[in-house]
Image 1 (cartoon, helix red, strand yellow):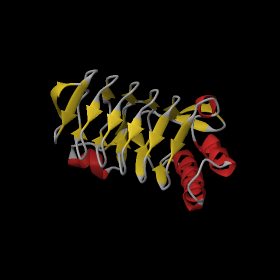
Image 2: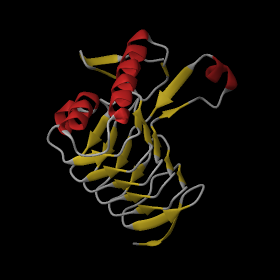
Image 3: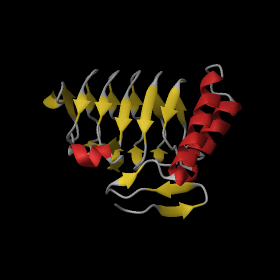
Image 4: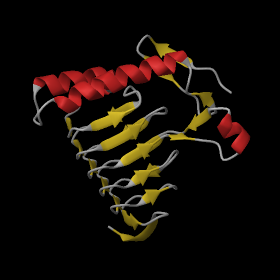
Length: 192
């Protein structure tokens, strides 16, 4: 099991191997993110300075201050600092991002309500799972993707530019650019 790689005083980067989610630094980072999400979620909808201030504390500070994006509350995430948003990103109500590994979301990406993006997974082996270890793999959603409501994106997936993911889909494998993909498991049905 890998040890944590400390990036700076504000973030912890997890490797793509198994890690202990009960690590005290990770617990502290999650509690900070959960507190910021709770503060964000009680504010009235709008593009107010308070919302932007909370999100700039929560999300990747290098990108979030320069990017134009909007996230409808309620919004939930594990850490925040592994979420990288480009310009024009929009999250509808109720999105959840488990960001133990980096999540890169390209320009003009739209997420429907209740979309869930999980970089985290648990071992299939029962003994490993019982030990409490988890794994994480990065997720990339390229420019101009539209993800329908209640879709679930699983660890290690890349969704190619211009693609559409149908509502309720479970994306367990990468999807190429410029296609419409739907279902559980999510499969390409036609070009866009």
